[in-house]
Length: 339
Image (tube, rainbow, N blue to C red; front, side, top):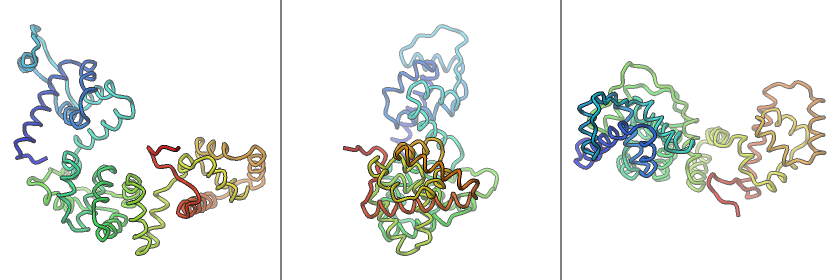
């Protein structure tokens, strides 16, 4: 959003006015109104509700009169704020969408580097970052949402993607001054940073989350290029990209065939590193007799070191990846239909 753009100013004024009106309507009626708005409008209005403190009687009466309501009460006060915005979102939408919108609201209301980029259309962000160096991009992308980060990373040419990915993966700390300088190249006025502290960043974790939000084709192209240039980094990222929740994404027939390639001893060690849901998924794709053999093997093994469990899990994941890459098994992407 360009603060000097008349269209942006008018849109924001509209959000501000709508926010004040909805606060006066109350949570129930406000939530009904939000259900009929676009996600961009919901985000803009709830951001203004979060920034609102209180409305006095005169201001409230003026707003209601403007929207065609007549108010005669002498003590008309309304409460805004982040909590009110969250209450309205929870009343308006199902839990998943409300949570997603609240997270988006948090990104925009908390002091967050590059938060203003979330207000821009993705094409504007791509254009804005098009000519930035890999060093600058590697600082900016981890501070975007995973979805927006995936869109930006996917829009870069292949020869830029790999150095950006390598730099992101090696990020550990970013000096606030570097953040301020990078942000200063993208906007006229630098956002206040507050107290000087070191920003902690787990570059590989952030990068893995972004890659998970990319389509399989671009994600695989980036990983293949990275594999050719930095095998160790590619392997580390591959392990972060895929967790044991992949059990839920492998069709039953493929999973059954996959598990046949592991011994009872190996599956015993693997099973000890799973949560209850993952363990149920594993067991559902084994015969009763085989599960009994695995339990007997577990009793025989007794206590084992955590390192043995971690090694067994890592070897299982490596095998899953290799079978996927060979086309021997399918891993269903989120939202993909299985026919």
